[in-house]
Image (tube, rainbow, N blue to C red):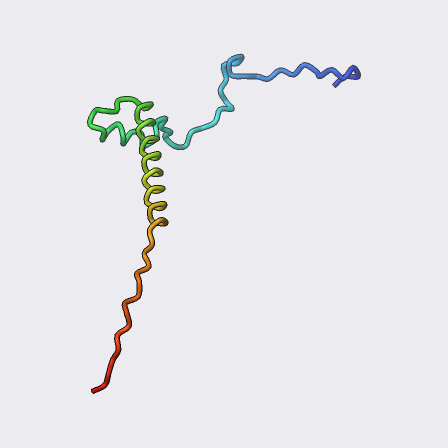
Length: 95
C-alpha cells in the first residue's frame, strides 16, 4: 500500500487471460452430476418419472410420508394404555 492508503493494483492471471492451464485441479475419480438414488427412482418408476426434478419431488414426498406415518404410530402408541388389570385373587384350600 502506498502512503495515501489506497490499495495497489493487483492483477491475477486467470485461465481466460492466458492459455496455460498448468494450475488446474486434477480429478482422481469419475464424478457424476446426478445422485444414484435419483437415477434409481427414474429407472424403477416405470416411466412415470422422466426428469431429475420429478425424482427429487418423489423423494421429498416419500420422506414427508415416512415422517407422517412415524408420527402417527408414535403418537397413537402413547395414547393407548397397555396395562392389563390384575385377575381376581383365587383362594387355594388344602384338602
